[in-house]
Image (cartoon, rainbow, N blue to C red; front, side, top):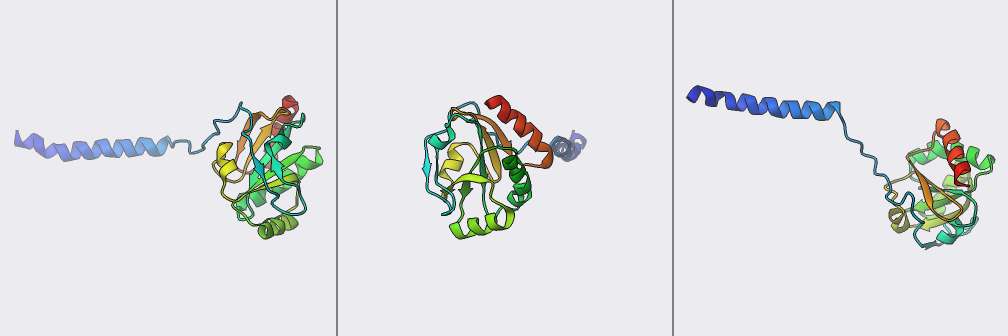
Length: 175
């Protein structure tokens, strides 16, 4: 009977090792998708983030025309990486509005002067309140908003070159 007790630690270690191995082979998805996709944009009014662009409100996103809503910050490195794609979307005729998250007017202006400014309107969300209300978990994130102010798509992370055609198609369908 005592000999079987000696095997218990080895069996427990083997079970632990197997559980860790399975977890490493099948990593979980850490992306947090918005529960707001398919729902109307929550009511908000944000002050202008910089003097050169007007403020942003939920009413601006229900103008009858599909738009992109980009959540960004000047301190965000992936936001720099997506800047050329946002400019490309703007050149394609896409209206892009923005929420500047936890940022200052000086830093936002410096960021836009350096990397380009594709935004029609930029709202300042210094406490990330609106960002959280729309279900954004980080920066950058981009939402496709239809002409009625309904969130129809969420793009988590930076927009890459290969994402541009897909976003243009989603915007076309949202019209």
